[in-house]
Amino acid sequence: MRKENVEEKHLTQFAWAIIGPGAIAHRFAEAIQLLPNTYLHAVCGRQAERTARFAADWANDGRAPRVLSHIDDLLNDARIDGVYIATPHAFHGEMVQHCLAAGKPVLCEKPLVPNQAQAQALVALSRERKVFLMEALWTRFLPIYEVVANWLATDAIGKVHGIQSSFCFHPEYDPQGRLYNPALAGGSLLDIGVYNVAMTRWILEVALGRCPEPLAIHAHGVLAPTGVDQRVACTITFPGGVSSQFICAFDTCADNALRIFGERGSICLPHHFWEATQAILHIHDNPPQEVHAPMRINGFEGEVEEAMRCIRAGLVESPRMPHAETLAIIAYLDEIRNQLGVRYPFEA
Image (tube, rainbow, N blue to C red; front, side):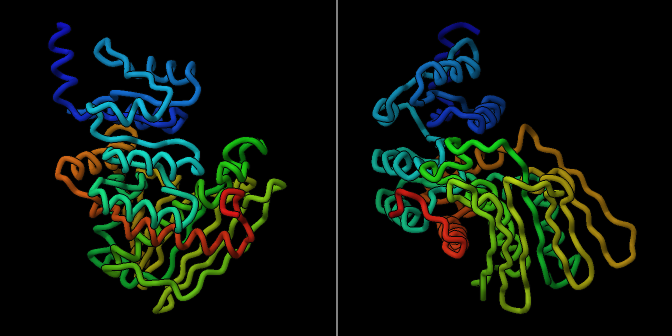
């Protein structure tokens, strides 16, 4: 491709910037590189060498993303159409606030921020400045959940009575790493339990038309030596006798499945429900109906396309992942952390 054509291409496409070039950001970069009409324009990180390597990894058409060492350089780049934030949880709020104040639309990794007070402030700023903000809960946009949504919407299993899910893995204990460090908002609940909570709410929203307010939340857990939660077991009770039970942990092995129990049958996503491509419908004693719905790229494409669609339409929030949903999810997480006695230094 001639140089002038490359430049013209990048002037007409949706230009993304990334803040926080860590492991999860590579998945985002892969998605936007393979989607049409978008590209990675800039990468901003605190470590110059790491940021430069990330940019080199995602060079496209002979052109590498800009390497930025300070957020002001990103905020002053008029070419950027949207910013994806993938720093540790504790730094999300500051980065989102800077971007919204500068008029930069934001797609921020889950959880949006570590507590509801910060989330409320950012949602208020997004609405005040009329700048798009969306929490990146990519699971809600996976193709297999369209299948599950159809089963629930058509009453395939009857009234939903219960939900069970697990998300557990056993990483090496590192008190300074992001999983266990309280200064980085570590802990299993915010890192992985957010998926259990978010998909519980999504299931009830689809099945009932809206997710009702919970009647009770009961949580138990085990704390790591750093004071963050390394294991959480929780039961959430809703009106009508519906309950959701989940476990998330950094010290446990589990099947990491999600199961939905109804009066006439059940739905199971048997493997890694947060990134599932398979779902099984059981109706009474009938043979199970198994459906596979592969990802088009790596699973991030759905949330990326939704963010771009909303930003191009001038929306402040996504109707599929609205601000109210983010606020509801973080309210659950706050209550669970309060019951466990987990508090971060920046909340003191």
